[in-house]
Image (tube, rainbow, N blue to C red; front, side, top):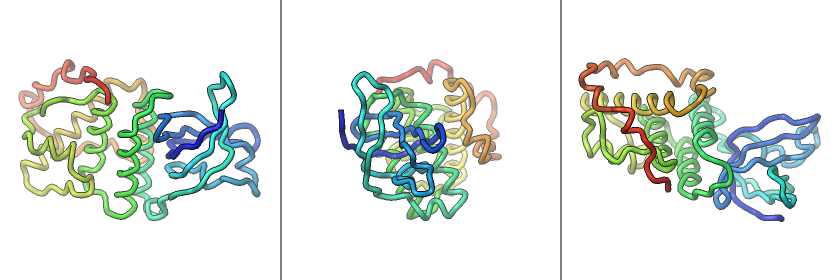
Length: 238
């Protein structure tokens, strides 16, 4: 079977002498594993299409009964050059890709997840990430993956909760003390969810220091108590 689909590279691994195997999140086929033969050779074609968070239209061949496809061609849409020139932006882009990799099953399409990742990378390309960028992305991916919370927790206001789930990521610039406290609580929700549902920590948290605790998150144990484990039970996936 041969098909074409838009996709974003989540991660890559060297394979054999000159091949690469990549995890690709596609618009119509979800997350799939595909091989790029010979791409690591000096004259290898499609090298740019095998880089992390590259966005391209791929032509893919899958053998009957096969589980790993082969990329036979493609057209590059963007490698997000401004993101790659900035270490902070690169760290967030890799973090988002790893979150999608870890929280999505193989071969289950979700155009909403694809659009979430693409919009986050696009906003990183043309803007400056704010302190709420990562938490808002994580909360939205949780919702799409079936782990979202249908109501605010930790006394977060409904309007703040709505903005974290619906507003453009680049517009979430908070300065009021109550908003900063709510953001810290959102970060705590994300950390507790990832600690509970991932079998091992995200590599991007360890490698880029994205797991640093926000000093503003020091609320009392009584305030934190309403977030029970039952609140993180899976909701219906989209």
